[in-house]
Length: 320
Image (cartoon, rainbow, N blue to C red; front, side, top):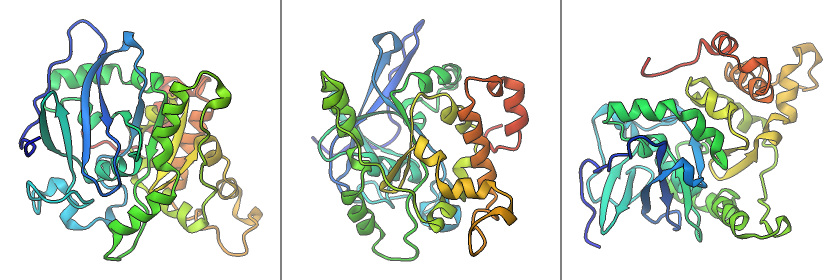
């Protein structure tokens, strides 16, 4: 195809009088390949199979984000035909015989890079792309069915952001190397196996990551993800949740049962650490506990509106 078109993506209107959404299918590719996707409209009545992405629009670790990646500052935007790298967040969206180059948030771009498979397409619902953000009427209608989207998804992937590579100049290569050896790139393969298999015994089982070290847990707890208002329903409504941090991935059930989190719940004098538990002083740990406690009791009175308002009144939201 010719070079992708620049500018605003030409969204086709969603059908009137029906619950419909757009789904973004990420085509297979290597970590360093350009991100090529397809966007299609589907009806809920067709029972679409998709994974919903839960993430923060901005970098969840602001202190570690270079100023050139702050996409909404208006400065240092990537050149139109710059090679695809984590610092030039462009996604190619194909529609019919045409390709469109669309700029996305830096954090979302990294999520798509890590979730992409070498061999299988991955169908996602991603709010920033699947909703026409310039159409206020459509935004309102889609927000109204958000609970159905996250309830009916095969699973929800919680993107906690990239690993911390410090000030290294080879971050992209390090990400690539970690991605090749991590379990995240196998997510789409596992979903395809589940779809194609006629018997449960033939379903590919993912090799989830082990409980991380305290320093990694401390960084994860510092993510802005846990403080955002939108993610409350995204974490608490789905049937299945997996958490992704860079190239590693955990089942929600394993994450909620981490020993270090259990230890952080105990009074300081009862903790078994020879040194202070790093999570004790991390304000994000309280937000994690609020979410996990609510999800674990999602079929109880704790999901009543007044209880949720009381528990999450301090959560943040850019557009009030």
